[in-house]
Image (cartoon, rainbow, N blue to C red; front, top):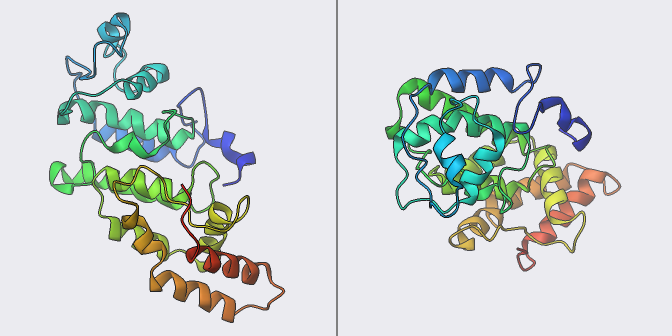
Length: 250
């Protein structure tokens, strides 16, 4: 999805329009995660204004104002966020992420790390069906969207409890031309070729092990061998391959 098409998915701030391809998933999330309002937003009292805190749950799940959600993410969370609170907030988070609007000034990486979303044992089968569809939709959107770097998106789900190997398996299963173009734009287009690794990884080696893996190099070398030197894909694959051996960027 090119930048010029981003507004087709967006309604008012943090909203997905009725005509968007993401709308059915958003509606399913609200239906499956329908839950009563908790009594406490479970964040630092100094970080969330008294008025916002007292009215935080007055709007229901779908009606939660976008600036309330953004301030909730800005606030320091309590050490443990309860499942009941995250169940209440999750469908609104789904819609906000799929809208493409900025939720947190720090980036997308911490958006799912306040509760271990990626553990299916926490959820009913219908709930996990929505969570899994959401994860796959957002990660697949990263193949063409110019919203965030691919490593940032993978990190967001990894910090939310998803298995890192499984996430990279999804990425490496993309059409090679699409994968190479995505990595070229992240690693080579506007900078000296180098792997982009977000600073939010607890250890950058987690990500680098996959980006420097033989599996990715095999994909790149096959693309080079199957294309003419004058082809754009050939040039991009060569640049991405060179980036793998360069010091990582942050």
